Amino acid sequence: MEAYDSIAVRYADLARNELDDLPLDRAVLAAFAECVLTAGGGPVAELGCGPGRIAARLRDLGLDVFGIDLSPVMIGLARAEHPGLRFEVGSMDALDLAAGALAGVVSWYSIIHAAPREVPPYVAEFGRVLAPDGYLLLGFFESGGGPVAEFDHKVAPAYLWPIDDVAALARQAGFAEVGRMLREPREHERFRRGHLLLRKR
Image (cartoon, rainbow, N blue to C red; front, side, top):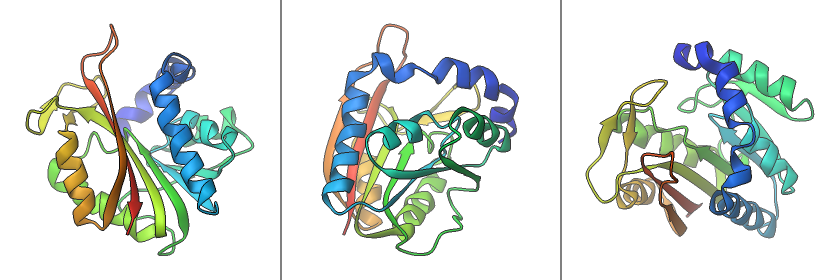
């Protein structure tokens, strides 16, 4: 939390318009939103929301969305930038939400700093707060087929994951895979990006 608190303003400035140049990422978010809405809609949480840009995008796609992040500074920035949305301080592995309360959960690169042993409890908590048949969207750095590996992220140590391993963890937590998207790195990016759209069984 402290690492992101210290760079929150700079991070928010850099990430604010990031989606403008990422058509595949926008398509994944749109597919998630359409799935949730087609299933009847309901509340959606972006977990690890940072300054709120993804939550705002999901709102624009028609979702009833709110954000949760461990960093109070990030939450303050999100509230200032997006005053029409609700943002709360909280931890992804101990959510102050009732079981089955949500129609959707988005974890957009928010599990990347969790040590491998910590990821299954996060995914289990996502499943706990999702209603049956609710949707989960995971975004993460993908290892290109290699094993889980730590790398030197600019803010704090982070991990690359094989997409098949993330999908297997999700299956063990009671999710069925709906689809996946792998994006090759752009010129200034180091790693592939993995995205999994999942549905709670």
